[in-house]
Image (cartoon, rainbow, N blue to C red; front, side):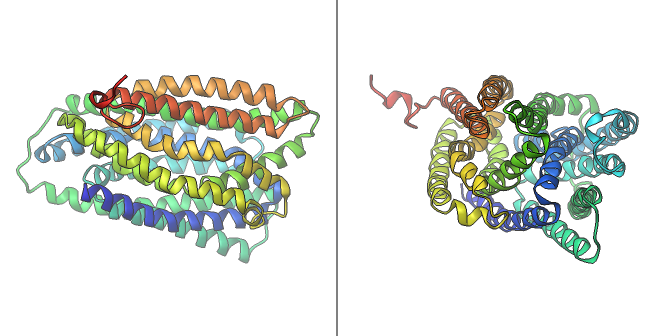
Length: 442
């Protein structure tokens, strides 16, 4: 447990710095791009995340689970086959991207070079994923923490430097913002893959047990395919969400420009601030996946129960005070970005979405570690369908508008968290009050 909490604290400390830098990046983007430009940038970013998920194939999760569950003598052979498999898949994905991206209409309203940035991003993410999965499985969280810091520092320095030295039109300014993001990923690749390659070289001299490439591919794909499906579903819905919101708002009589500006305030200001504390939840996720996987492989039910209790208490201990702080100081926080009362109102109304997502993220890690990825996927589909339906039907009503959108977003987060929570409790034999079932009396 000491290793678990040390990893969480290390990642959380690094993530706090990283998220603070991310806020600075968003402030710079907001001032440089303006409301409409920020909305335009936020509209394309979910598509960028979608490409990242496809390129990574969720190898960090599948490799980390394999490392956590299997004996050390099997690690070298697995990594060798995983690297060869990644090379083949990456070449195929780059070739497909070169052919397909010119025909994807979402890029038509952006600079032509944005497509080539996405092509360059694919091999970076693919090879970084191998190293990320290895260090995650070995619970060497220091390297992951440093890589996150390098990414944010590099993006901030590049963005600030370029914007101060040069002046751009809106289209080129968005291109520069995306280019600095890709550049920061390249720096992470250099650091993580170099560290990984040094440890990989040391493993050659150890007593290793070889496995067939088919067995390794089958083991990795058993986790990668459903996990990638889950992440792809989230990414696709996140990519669709901006257009759904703007379409619903347009149905209320708002112009396309006004709808884009409102979405920019929602995504670029309120959501950016509200999900700032989620770095703790993501730190828990990174450490929980290998920890829960190892405990599940050893059938250590007591450890799983104890972990769940502690994770829930940790989340409540930071989540509730944060929400109260947002409600009390919403205008002071949003004024960092824009002098807009709308953004402050959005931040206040979204508190259920923020709070329940803080709980949702580690619960998803639990389901992955328990091998219940299909359960997480099915529940995500149901909650998203309900959320999107509410967002459209309520958001398109002139009397509600963006308030209706927010109701739908809150409903989706609350429903999904509760579904995940009940599934985890059932799987490890614990009541919804975090007590063993044999201690609960009807």
